[in-house]
Amino acid sequence: LKTKVKGLEARNFTKNKQIKNLQAKNKELDMKVQELETMGKQQMRKFYDIDRDRAVAIAYNKKLQENIIGFETERATKNKEFKNVEAQNQELSKKVESLESELRHPRANLQALVSVARVIPDHLFFSSN
Image (cartoon, helix red, strand yellow):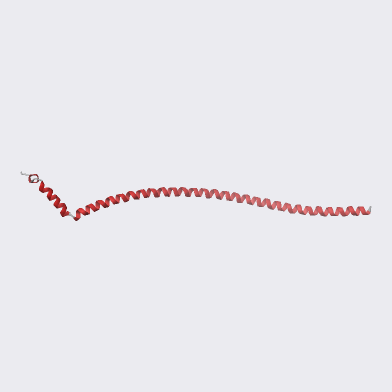
């Protein structure tokens, strides 16, 4: 009977030791679970931050695209205006060249007028009173 009791005590001691080891292991696992839960919360915050930053970047890019379209439209308008002004400048340059040519050759113009005047009868120039 004494041997039986000692055997039961030894088994009981072993079982208690195993229980303590399991409790320590459970405590360690609980700490790891808490650590993982904390990490999960941190990851969720990071995901939220990333999503928020992505939304801000998308809005900013959309605004930049609108600005680019506005600048391109403005540039196209300015190019059209520039071409119109260039065409006007060319027309004015031709007129200036023509006028300069006339000023350079007043004698030819005067001669042309004189030849026209010779053809016109005198009585049209001089009226008798």
